[in-house]
Each structure stands twice: as C-alpha cells, then as structure tokens.
Amino acid sequence: MTTLTLVRHAKSDWGSASLDDHDRPLNDRGRRDAPVMAERLVASGLAVDRVLASTALRARTTAAAFGAALGVEPELLDELYGAGARVLLETATGSGAASVLVVAHDPGMTVLADRLSNGGIGQMPTCAVAVFRWETDDWDVAAATDPDEWSFDSPRG
Image (cartoon, rainbow, N blue to C red; front, side, top):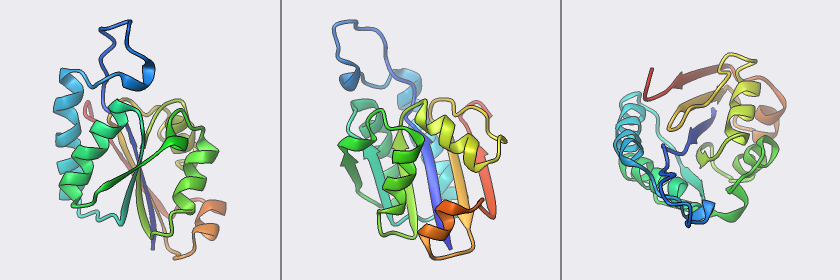
C-alpha cells in the first residue's frame, strides 16, 4: 500500500509586516491546532515513514507537531516552500517511502488535494489533513492513477 498525507501548515501570524513571508510563525490558533490535528491523525491509526516539510517557519513548526506525534523526525526541503501540486507529488513519489506526510503551503496543497480527490476536497484550510491511499507499492502507479480511498479532516470540521 502507498499512502500520501497532505497537511497544510497551521494558521500563521500576519502581525508583523516587517517579517519575511518565510519567517512568519504560527499564531495562537495555529499553535493549538497543529498538535490536536496530529493526535487525531495518530488516533486514526495512520503510520508514516517520512515527514517532509517546507523550510518556512510555519511549516516547520506544524511538521514538528506531527513528527512528534508520529515518532518521525521531519525533513526540511527548500523545494516545498511555495511548491505547486506537481512538485509536491514528485517530492513524495521520490521519497522512497511507502507512507509519506508532506507539510507545505497553498495554493499547491489545495490543487493537489482537490485533484487527487476528484474535486471532493475543494479547499485545504490551514492545518487540514488529507490522506490518500493506493493498493499498490509502486509510486509510479500511484502517481498515475486515482487513489483507492481518501479521507479529509480539518480543525473546523
């Protein structure tokens, strides 16, 4: 089985206009939501082999919460910062792991989640989690076909 879990970073703080976009931290809601969503994912029984995250502070912090809950050290990848759907999927498929969790940004996360769900997801709000499963061990097959099943969860849902 091949599993791709997409996590849009938790809600960030827009309070300081002097901060570079890459350095924006999570706000209070984001710091609350990330561990809650991570625990909900663990409670679902999902295990992951690798956690890949954008280098942006808000994504790193979100990934740290998920990594801690899942017992997997996040790997930070520059190419995930502002990545489009194609790069997000290629990074996961090239990971060499059967189950990958990716923490990144919109619009790429929404575009990929919506595409993999055939329009069922629509929008990935902050800290939303979408899990896609294929009944194959081959990422090339998974990337070229619709998932056999998918699920979606968000802090507001």
